[in-house]
Amino acid sequence: MAEELQTGIIRISDDVVATIAGLAALETPGIAAMSGGISEGLAKRLSGKNAQKGVSVEVGQLEAAIDLRIIVQYGIPIQEVCRQLQENVREALENMTGLHVVEVNVKVEGVAFKEEESEDSPTRIK
Image 1 (cartoon, helix red, strand yellow):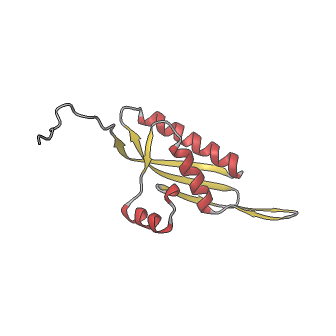
Image 2 (cartoon, helix red, strand yellow; image 1 turned 180 degrees about the horizontal axis):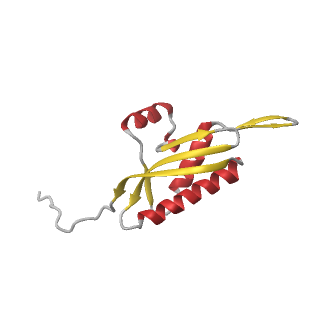
C-alpha cells in the first residue's frame, strides 16, 4: 500500500499485512494452527517469518486479498469458524492498515484432535 500525503508517502509491506492477518487468524476461537507446506515451512524457518505461516497476501495501492491455510479444532462447526475467521482478519487489517480487504479465502487443511491421556497406557516395572 502506498499513500501520498503532503508530507510524503506511506507504504505498508506485504510482510506486515501477512503478519497482521496471521495473528488475527490465530486469535480466532476454533483455529488450532496455521498450516504451511513443506517448502513454505523451510523458507519461513530460514527467514524467521513464522508469524506469516499459512498466509499469502496480494496487496495493491488501496486493497488487499488474503489466502489462509488453517487447521481447525475437532468438534467445532467448520463453517462458523471460517466465517468468524474471515471477519476477524478483515476487521484487523482494515483497522490497522486502512486497506480495503476485498477477499479472505480460507482453505481448511486439517483437523486437530485434543490429546487425551489413556488410562491403559503401559507402565514400567523396575
